[in-house]
Amino acid sequence: METDLLIIGAGAAGLFCAGTARAQGARVVVIDHAARPGEKIRISGGGRCNFTNLATTRERFLSENPRFVASALAGYRPSDFVALVDQAGIGWHEKTLGQLFCDGKATQITEMLIRRMAGAELWLDTTLAGLSRDADGYAARTSRGVIRAKRVVVACGAKSIPKMGATGLAYDLALQFGLRIVETRPGLVPLTFAEQDLALCKPLAGIAVEAEVSHGKTRFRDALLFTHRGLSGPAILQISSFWRPGEEIIVNLAPDADLAGALRDRRGQGGRVAIQTVLGAHLPARLAEAIAADLGLEGARLADQNNAAIDRIAARIQRWQVRPVGSEGYRTAEVTVGGIDTRDLDASTMQARDVPGLYFIGECVDVTGWLGGYNFQWAWASAHAAGLSLAGALR
Image (cartoon, rainbow, N blue to C red; front, side):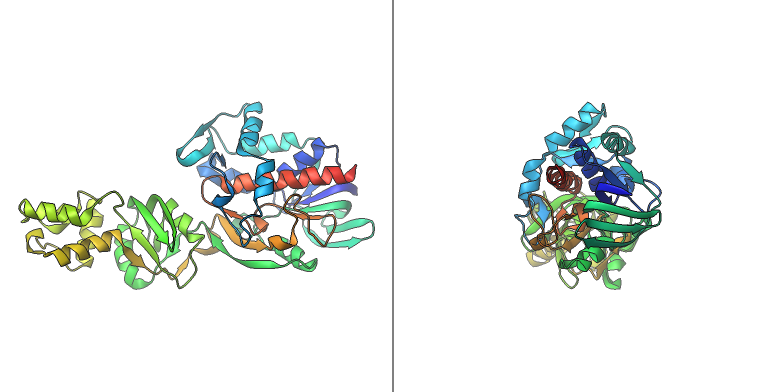
């Protein structure tokens, strides 16, 4: 089998790159070891695919080189993908913070991408046994035979959600051809606590509150969810990409309140009421009761608390300092932080600087977006950059 372009990976980036290259007239083969294409698309956004974010800027991405994303993002914007969705007749809606979702099933996006790459060959249930390079291009040994290609795009994702087939293949290929890897870790993932902190969290599993979570100068405000293992919810998933083991996060469980002032005012109005009752005006009742008990104040009256005690209560709620012991790992992580070092890639084409004809796109690169459609936009943008470059090079 001979082709202009071999794409390894039939996820969001791989399928999109195939469509872009096909539009330029390139012969394309896409291979994937999975039985179905676009598995992460299928499960994303609760099954409705948060396919982009209108607020996309380079500041919404983590990378050792924060400027690396600028060229690709400028070359393919959220409005470009929205136009593609509109052209396909797929209904969509905007949620908070610029997040765009399908009205119907996420599989509509995969189907659109498959139609867009019409004329390309898609080989599923196909494993890669080896990839080599010679003067004529590349030879890929697969479970269906050898494919010779002038160019190769590696779009096989990263380590997150291994039950869906995620592997470290992209990193193995990068190392084989001399590229460097920025240390990887799970991102957009729930955080887990030690036993002393779980004593508070376990009984509260399932309770959600609006919270502000910070790590250093980085902070996110969104829903927070108590779990049997620690904390989850969008605010925690966001901060998890910045957090490292051994570090502390600070949680504000009542970000809109002047809690110390409110407690003093209520005490001045007659503070015979129980502390957890007053806290219940700002927090879910079970959470208010659990915090009062955690502070040894269960059943205590507000009238008996001096200003120092009130400040301590407010700080426990609005500056809860907690040190997670870990995360739920790649098993539930939505993305992988780190990856192929951007110093070894051309930002405008995604081609390896020292390996002509070899490209890396999507999640395997050291580029990680915030929660909310940013990682899909990076998949589209990086794939578009590579697809255009490949088509031009093959003329």
